[in-house]
Each structure stands twice: as C-alpha cells, then as structure tokens.
Image (tube, rainbow, N blue to C red):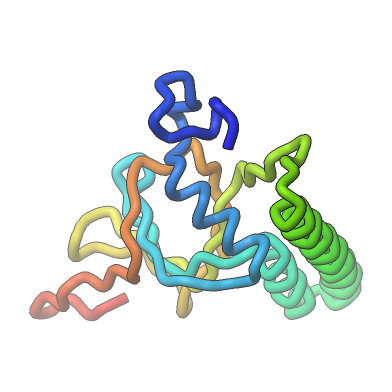
Length: 165
C-alpha cells in the first residue's frame, strides 16, 4: 500500500471513502455482489453492489428490450462487447495482482475504480417516500459523491395507506 492509499494518511483523497472503494474494487475484480445502501446528497439509494462488467451486460440486455428493435439490437451488442472487454481486462488485472502478491512485487498502478454500480436500485427521499422504479433500476455513480453507506438493502416501513414502492 502506498502513502496515498493509506486510510490513516491525511494526504489521502478525502473525497472517496477508502473502505467503500476497497469493496467496489473487490466486487469488480472478483465478480461478487452484495446488498448495500448509499447516502448520496440527502437521498438513500439501496440495491445490489455489482461489478462494472455485470452492469454493462445488464444495460445491454435492457437495450435489447427497447421498442426500437434496430437501435436496441445495435446498442445491446455494443454493451455486450464492452462488458466482455471490461471483464477480460478485470480478469487480467486480478491475475497480475495475484502474480505480484505471490512474488512480493508491487504493481506500478493500483486499480482504483472511480464509479460504483448497483442493480435493482431503489431511491428514497425520506424514510417512507420512495421514487417509483419497476422492480429496481441500474445505477452508476461517482464514488467521490457517496456520503455514507451500510451493507444491506433498505426497505422503509409500510405506512397505513401508503403502499410500498
């Protein structure tokens, strides 16, 4: 770990949460998923933390379902190819890191994902007021914009006369 990445170092970039970036990095490199709720600018965003490649794959699948079949087909293919390319790059990066770790060497550049990706995201403005999404949405945001987080999905209590969204 270099000086800039040390979470105890006051010179580290204070705009990003080191721990959150570590989890996003692990999800990207290992293809894991975990429920998470983020606080972003006063709004809660709750969903499943997913890898960049999975996010791209899901965007492509969504594009294929577009009413304009021609555009949806082309865009779906573009995103599928991009997802495959990103996945290959991430697998290669993971292998490089494993080789470096086993040989005791450090890599020239640390992998620092600038974005966080959620699937099945739901958005909440207040504890009992969600923004409607049909089953959840794909969401991409800057890590530096996240104010806080906790693991697990947020579901507001159901209020009388207020159906859960």
